[in-house]
Image (cartoon, rainbow, N blue to C red):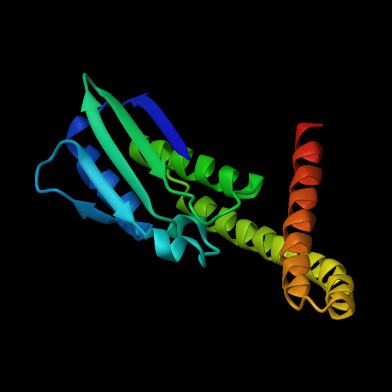
Length: 178
């Protein structure tokens, strides 16, 4: 997943300090000793698979300044994730709030509010995955007993979880586009 933003700044001198404050405040680590481009990293691919907070996904942010214009490129690795609309919306808020924090209209609390909403939404998907695993896993388990193929239960549970989450995601996307 990639995000980019470009905007004009009046005070180039405070850009690095404001950018540091924003990304270090979100838990990113700064890389590189030179002033430009500014690079911030967070997370790992392995932790992506268990992180319920998208801000903990493996991500790299590169910030450059060209003729009073700030260009920020967000490279978010979503390996191991089935990215939900709320998670995409969270990253959109983070990107927009970076701009606001640099031009002096910071809304850092909006990031945390969005994280809470996103986590709640993610747990909703987990619930649907569990329901799907049960709905498909139990009948497949009985079928597996009948035909003496024990793996059918786990296959059915996995299929059910994926199907229910995909259906839930499709319903949310349809509601969002209306």
